[in-house]
Image 1 (cartoon, rainbow, N blue to C red):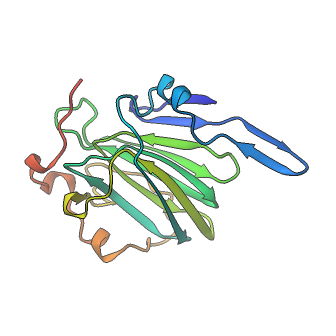
Image 2 (cartoon, one colour):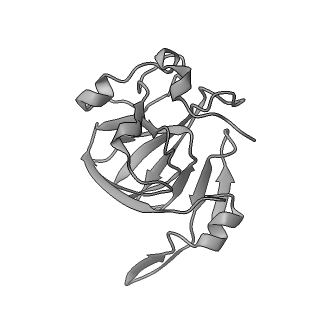
Image 3 (cartoon, rainbow, N blue to C red):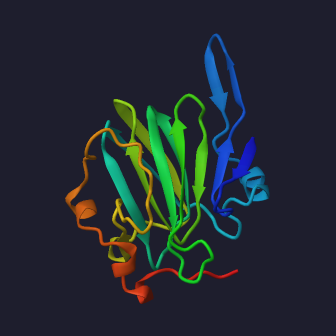
Length: 188
């Protein structure tokens, strides 16, 4: 596997080795030792796996939990998405910055979104199935959301028209409107 640190170095794009022949393919989607060596999930453990299916134009995000921050190892197992991580850790040198990557079922890449980052994705294909491993359980009382179109963050979504959002995502505030005591703290 190849692990590439993105412009925010804690976010890692993983390109696995794909073994294929006329019968299909095999991909190793997680190997604890190799992922830890790449800086993924160090000091954490994965405790919950999730899967979501959506159609073209759906935009989910930007989501996080605080407390109970979740690190997420995300992938697209059917179709294609544009995946985004936004650093919302108070005091971080990259606070309010974002990185994104196209994830699809052809390349089998994964994105490591560390705890303290807001996460979201836009479906690019007719249908996409999105899978992710989490380092903490889902806690609805700890949910936080940041506006997907916050101009101070400036995510460059590859939109073709208006995205389809949940009512909850439509109501997410800008990052600057969130009480700072609700946000995760950056630590070295």
